[in-house]
Length: 452
Figure 1 (cartoon, rainbow, N blue to C red):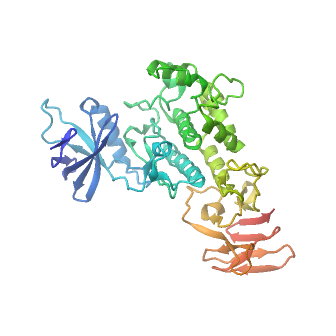
Figure 2: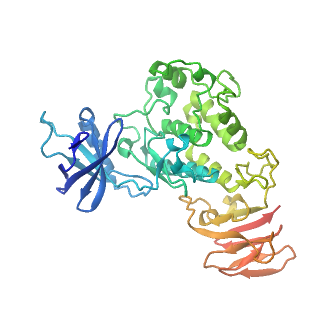
Figure 3: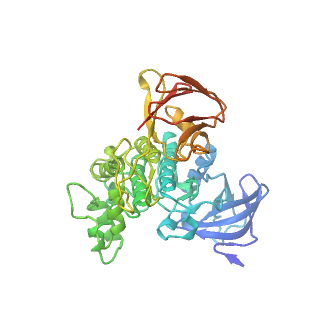
């Protein structure tokens, strides 16, 4: 029986000479089909290109990616080129590439918008974590001088319980300045690419626009240019998309152009979500989709998104009345709960200082029940945020309900200085009561103070 282009049971050959046997069709996309295959090392995924796309340039790109030997666990990176030893009847052999199979815990982002039961575990904290991990993943590519070129919601998957991400379809990532067959997905493409401006090429600068669109969709549940003007379009054909995303792109919350505002009766979720978004994120979206549209170098960079999302994540506050999670402005006043409308009661903050000399970094963590301090909090510029490396956790006193402390989950001894001047050690596994004015030394130059 034939599964798409390849028959189940068909034997292919990797360039190394290893045999690859086709098992079943996983699915198809714009460039080809993906199959589960068996190899001497176990099951793998095989992306097999449509004949018209299996050209010399795509093979050259794959060879370059495979030679890099990318080992980042956030990417399903190409590992080997696979050929059909028989070849199609035309005599020109097709090809594809092997990659790891995507684990079942990872779901696609469109599942959020479908309200799929598979993502029901995703909380507001999870979504911000997904956004943060997404930024860090693409930042890691860009730091190596590689442009992804086709950032869109179909190429990234997430774990609705942990917020971990997995980037797929990495076969169009190329070294900055080099050409590739794919320029992007129009809804996510930078306006200069949609307009086909002279000299405009996909690269890390256009990736920044695509990344911001993806973050907006993730946090706002809609596209940044889909407001009143989009709703007036009767046929969303290519010409309409080029106007909406290229020749006349108007951000739905452009402060100086209200033509494309969301329609409240048609887009109530967008209106409500924008109002609940912290100012630090709203300002970055405005910058990227106004100044950044006109002047690409003004787009918000990954480092800026990373810092802002991390700060917002540490400031998430649960409403004491309805129990819903709220995004709050770091260092800002208590907002009203997006769900019940009551003013939130903000928990105390742990003001952390890391680094040495004049380059010390300051950040705050809301000390809500079960809040955690992670290893990445204690270093000035972590490579990535790891939410498995727990340093400390806010725990409730077992006998005195309503009294909370910070439990040491490390193997090191902390030093605590109370507001009365007394000093004590906080040994591994022990807890120090949380009171305003408490000073903590975690070691390595990391210090903190509890503030109301």
